[in-house]
Amino acid sequence: MLTPLFSYGCELVGWMLPQKFLFDAEMAYVAFITNGHAWSARSGQWIGPVVGSHVFDVDGRPVAWNPAAPLRGFGRPLRPVNVVRAVSPVRPARPVSPLRPLTAPDLPGGWSQFSYAEWLVSSDPKPVEIVEEVVVVETVDEVAVVAVVAVDAGEADVRDGSEAPDHGVK
Image (cartoon, rainbow, N blue to C red; front, top):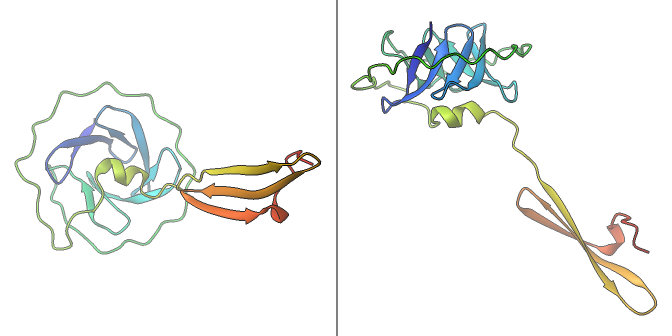
């Protein structure tokens, strides 16, 4: 049976198949649960502990909860040993919309800084994009590489032509 998960603002953000899988509000598979911890379905990275029908970030702050069980915060959990990825489940039928809780409990340590969607990818490796542009100056007799510009995740690195890779330009 699927358990609805709510944000601090009491919005339906996802569903849990207890002790097995997490889904987003549209029933897309987003994480698997093993030994009381959630792991990203996309990257396999640990994203935080799961206690009952509540999910927490890696700092031990709640990300999503279910009002059927009491919610208690705790300190920063120990990172578990990596696990083997679970086989993707069959997409379940969307359950009937649950009743929305009136308020979320306030906890001494506060709630996670991440929304449910942000939390799901918060531990994923950041994509790295490397774009390289070679600037070439031609004269009548020769071709010279003047600069190589490498852009890595938004930062540019300009090197003179002496370090330029061979791109077939002679």
